[in-house]
Amino acid sequence: MPEPHNLEHARHSLAHLLGAALLELYPGTKLTIGPAIEGGFYYDADVPVKVSDADLEKIEAKMRELLPSWAGFTREEISAADASERFAGNEYKLELIAEIEAKGEPVTLYTSGSFTDLCRGGHVEDMGSIPADSFKLSRVAGAYWRGDESRPMLTRVYGYAFASRAELEAHLQVLEEAAKRDHRVLGKQLDLFVFSELVGPGLPLWTPKGTWLRTLLDQFVWELRARRGYERVEIPHITKKDLYEKSGHWTKFSDELFRIKTREGHEFAMKPMNCPHHAQIYARKMWSYRELPQRYANTTMVYRDEQTGELGGLSRVRSITQDDAHVFCRMSQSKEEANKIWDIIEEFYGTFGFELRVRLSTHDPATPERYLGEPSQWEAAENTLAELARERGAITLAGAGEAAFYGPKLDFMAKDAIGREHQVATIQFDFNQPERFDLTCVGESGEPERIVMIHAAIMGSIERFATVLIEHVSGAFPLWLSPVQLRVLPVSAKFAEYAQKVADVGRSVGLRVEVPDADETLGKRIRAAEVDKVPYTIVVGEKEEADGTVSVRNNRTGEQETLPTAELIAKLATLVTTRS
Image (spheres, helix red, strand yellow):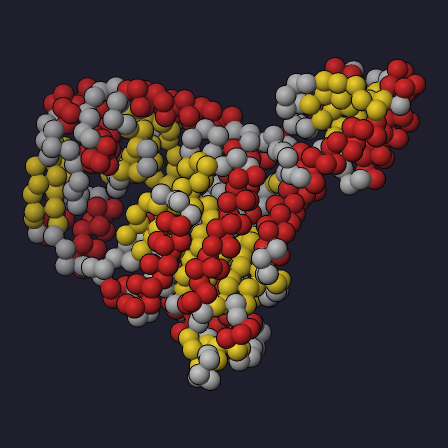
């Protein structure tokens, strides 16, 4: 297998091999596209018969059979007319050829073995460099052509590919562990959220337990912000088209908007982001430089018309709860404000044991036309963020060209318990909206001075962070965050009244306590508490009632002890207060 930096080429080459295997096994198949993706590759094909996961072994065997007969890839550049003749009868390839021709780009074919495909390139020089045991087909799925529900449904075959068999097996082990931690499975098991066909895909409904989780996470973020001078604001869920036209979002995101036509013919949209609204709150008056920064925080839903095929559990939804905040300040204040946001991010993610890495996403100097704002603004902002990272002792990953069109940013990546990395929080500078909405303050000279806007998302969205957190802790939330913190189990119905008294002591200090009916054996009820990942289980019987004590089990560590009721409840209350 080639060096890691050529792994993408190897994966793309294996996609070609997969396409060839599909053609040999299923005559009449029409191939469409086969890209490399993170961790592997896939190919979408219009196959005349139903293909399922049961067929993967056969397809994979055909790939290994073909592999020795493949060497390098030969490139051929031909006219669009010749290409259309070569792929006559395959309407998918013809559509791609027409698009390539319309863009004025060359039409290129790549051949290895006896297989030729329409392709832009990016392959290994020698297929013999790919170990036959370094790839594995993973699953079969359906995928609409071009992601459009009105177009034909295709068969998508996925595969994994790594530099060696050892790396492949390590990846498969991570996937096996990830399947046990899948937030969709645990969300149902722990009764956190549900989807309804009547409500619609991508629109999660949060149960009482799930709502506790959301609320507690949001309260934590607000507590961290309140300490640093943020103020809460509130905004509507719909807005006139005019706001997003002025902000520039209408042009950029018009295909992702849920649009509303009023009975008077006005056009509104469900808000896909909050920043233009917060900009309008800032713009309500002229501010003196002495009154800056202004820091607005707002946890609210936004709505995006994501394609059905891209939705998945809570990780990709249409109703997105953002813990959003925006700072309006002078450029000279931006470093201090970014530093405060960094403090919040570190404390929040450190509480859950996440390891963080930071990427400094800057503009691409080769394409300055892609970015809004003066070059001097970009230089100052990028230097500010780089200096901040150095002062905090952070090793930053270079993200040249990764900046948004409206400003540079710091992206924070969190590594979870099984080693997967997720992009989470962001500190984002914005030159676009202050310019478009003419946001200024009055400087020392009495003249208007353009300000900078800083986007400060901590969780990014509650839904997406919930997926990361659920899988990170495998549903075993820390005590302070657990929807049910304590379950009290009477040995039998005879001790139900004492169990309720113990529960009431816990509730009096704000603990979330359940006392299930004693209609099952004690063993089954103890096991149910473990399955439900309740942090602590209390068992009470004759001795406990006589002594005013409880027998408590820590379901995270398995430790058990007997304590006076008041002592235990005080201990748990302290753990909750300190988020231990």
